Amino acid sequence: MATDLRAGHPTGARERFGPAVIVDPYSSGRYYAPAFRAAGLQPVAVLSRPEVMEVYAPSWHPEDFDEVIRYDGDAGPVLARLRELSPACVVPGADPGVELADFLAAQVVPGRANVPALRAARRDKGEMAAAAAAAGLPTPAQICTADPREAQTWIARTGLAGRDLVIKPPKSASTDGVLRLPRGEGWRDAFEKQLGCLNQWDVVNDRMLLMEYITGTEYVVDTFSHHGVHTVADVTRYAKVDNGPHMAVYSTMEWVAPDDPVVSELTRYTRGVLDAVGMRFGAAHVEIMQTADGPRLIELNARPHGGGHPPFNRHATGDSQIDRTVRSVLGGPGEPIPTGYALHRHMRVVFLISRSAGVVRNPEVFDAVQELPSLHHSAVHVHNGQRLHVTRDLLNTLSLGFVVLAHEDPSQVEADCRAVRRMEAQLRLDHT
Image (cartoon, rainbow, N blue to C red; front, side, top):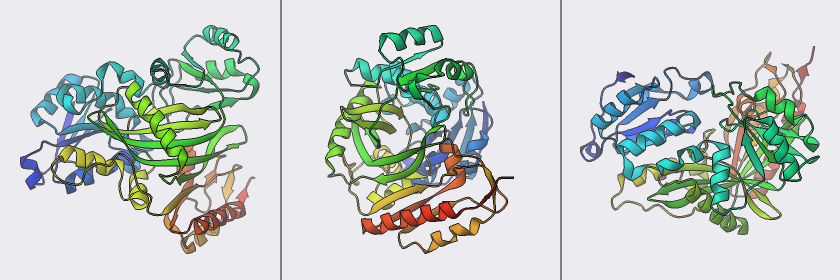
């Protein structure tokens, strides 16, 4: 363990609370430190590996923390330091820190921790599906195994031979390694190609998850749990498209009004999933396919919605998973945590998609984004001479960029969404 100390920031709240510990405060987890600081708690970072992964480097702000503790594989020194600090909470900021945060919280702040025996079900996609099924919740047919012969037997036994399948690593994220296999063709090659390899998060794919391909509308239910009570911070609806051979490339994400009938059904199902995986405290990002037969779990991520979602959600609803976490930790007579959410304005994220590979020649086509009446935030990263690859997963999408639209009139959001797509279609790539 290595520790960096920084000057403290004395506040009244420090007299009553220990520091707030964030494990891997990357992606949307970066918003925890400023929020806790503003509430009067010292932020402390624990890094689940000595060096910050390249994909997370842009969202790593060490200056936000009073202390940075680096975990080197030995939990003993980290636990000893945290016990000295007597933290108010230990929460994960991003996927790689979920398991370590779960372990540390159970040891040092058991009153704000999740069920230890179900730790694997909050990170491993195979384990979470098994936990949901064991709780009686309907889930897609799937198997998580390291043995292709076992997978072959499962395909035959479940009647999935000749049907579309999906394969993915059980401990990846951002659609890394997710493949759709039409008619199941080539599943063994896809299975063996990824098995034993490092995924984009430097985790060895010691097993592979094979599941039936289900259709419907994909939703995300973002939650915050405290004392086992699961509250809903927002529900969003994804539109995804196949981009050549690449499955489920993000196209748009739209906030759903809380009075939409689908929200109550998704909420009931989500709370069942959270109970099944032992969520008692903290944020979760639950992806669900609403099929003709009802909700089906795709996966759960026991951390805040990534991609900078919390401030966007605050603009749409007036609240966020980050805000609810801070209020829960502080307690007291302040604003209570609602079980649901309100929608103050219509909001949509438009993700840019590269349909082909090549060198960018006219990035100025996106200059018109700044004139859109509903523009809330632009994160377009296209520049002249940039070499683009065909968009295949969420990391590709985020590196290309997105536009956030928000307006009281939903027709304005729709019109501006179409305008962004026209700009995208005008982008010229040199394929030589």
